[in-house]
Image (cartoon, rainbow, N blue to C red; front, side, top):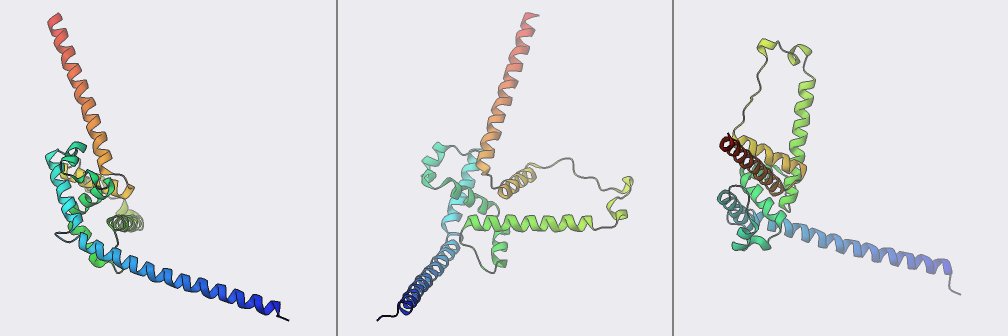
Length: 210
């Protein structure tokens, strides 16, 4: 007579061994996928790589269109078929190339995509800001509250480049597409221009009436 308990134990062992083998094979495939992604990322971010070419073209089109790149212009250049997020990431990488490459060089694990790089840099910036805030909070009260006459005055004016860099950083930290902000700004500019035109027309009408 077959021992039922022994048979069940053998079956369970076989199933476990099968699952372990499946898991080992999946792990092997994942390592190969990750390695391939890292290799592609390195290649695509080289000076003549895909993302550098795409980013430089996006920057050139942005300058040409004074910020907002029209969809028709993207189609003219044939890059309308490239994912919108990839275009935005490539443009970000070119605009922040020096800082990004320094961050990549310091990374121990490396990166598999621009999305992962952006996220890691945003986290690092947030941690650095938190440390700065903690350091300033820990200062003696005398240092934290200097006399009014000795207090350092904060700048009241910013250049266009400074505002642009801050806007890019805020968008990256918040995961917001800079192109969406650009569209909103252009709509606001159109509304302001329309109001100004209406005001001028009204002034002319009153002038003629008087």
